[in-house]
Image 1 (cartoon, rainbow, N blue to C red):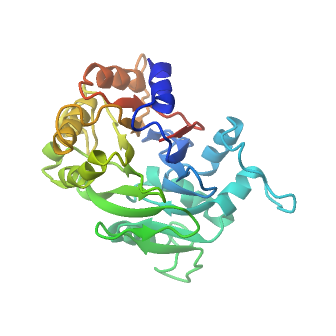
Image 2 (cartoon, rainbow, N blue to C red):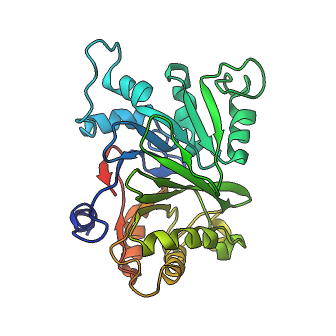
Image 3 (cartoon, one colour):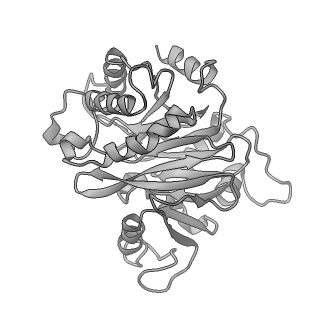
Length: 327
């Protein structure tokens, strides 16, 4: 089933088949699996420079991706003193997009910061404020930021995003805007990314369902995305499904299950034109929680539950660390 889904995702001759974005999985998991926490590189398919969507794992993810030959199109200049991993970190990643300030979404960036190059951190104002106050403050870590407590090393420059205005991402072919999401009492983010061909994709940080969170944030996002679907501009959605359907709503803490995701996607289908509006749309499932329990594989269960309930015609993809794929 997985190989079939991947084939459809990459090779289908549907409206979504012409790739607009190249993506490399630096980290695919949520929660406790350090070394494989949520982070994705993304670029316009006609560009050579990347940004990250979250940064839970960075250097270890680059190592895993290099081992899987995900960077065969990148040549390190002969006069560079860096390995390929170092060259990509310092020269090819042009900014970090952080959806929210939980450690499993930015630990890799923090740990890499001493050897990183100057670059922007993008996020909603509430997110960049927490990064500045909580991490880059000379208590948890040196202040590599452009604001905050103590001497500011200024390696990272904070850039606040807005739901209303596209921001050109320097040194890339991309633009971005951010919409707020509800995540168990804190503000998370969805990043809408647009390339020069006016194609878009959306990446969601951690989010609960509106029905559980008593929120309208996902509803607002779906309303924003519906016109892109109608115009055949939306290349795919990257969204979390952290837990199986067996986890009760009171224990989700701002996350989704297959049942809740399918309910939310049904609302998006309705807003985008009704039955069949999402047929062929790639849905990339992120942030599946690693389990310490015997005879438990959340990935397998979530795959089964999503595919069993898929009456929408979408294509589910489950990224693996180091993997390169396209939307």
